[in-house]
Image (cartoon, rainbow, N blue to C red; front, side, top):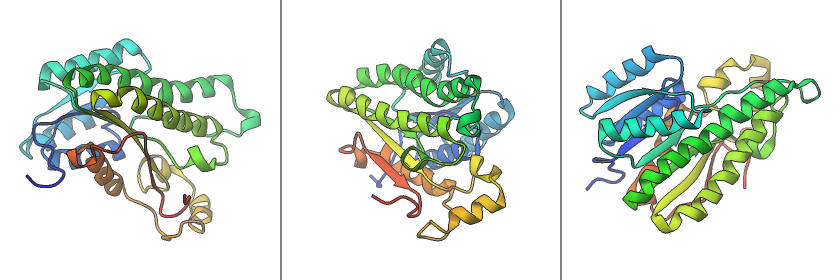
Length: 251
């Protein structure tokens, strides 16, 4: 069997219609996994992605949900199992960033960021873990951020939400370990996709001075890390945070 082979595994990727989610879906599909592609408000991109992976010879479906609603989270896990037969891997990619200086931050913004970035991850992870516990096998993979460890200007709520994911993942790992379900975090730094593309050139230039590798990361690099953590080969890794930031933050 080739290394990192995911043939026969079924994955649910949240935020699959985003640029990072799309790369993760493609990477998992290349290794043989069948994929449920979650979207919130962009059905066209999700459906196109499903068509793309089906051409690769794997099964794919799209599932819509507002993951801040626990009933929606339960529903799309049920849909994934009903349409694809099971659920082995969950990748939590969906999230938002609403920048605002701390002293001007409105309660509505804080509630939105914490709800979409942290509560939603808890709800969908809980729903997926129930299935994985019955299987006695599972991979929960959460996309956090370097700012959970470094902080960033105008990103207090965002940083808090990502730090919450880190703590949540460790607690899940403790509880689900006896059921052979792992829970790990990937904490990307400055990745050339999604939210970082909306950053001003001035801010990008300043940030680049602190990146040891002197370049941005790619969504593909993050996706390859997801493949590893989803594989049998990563079966003894749980409760860990994989930092992918080019040396922006070193431990």
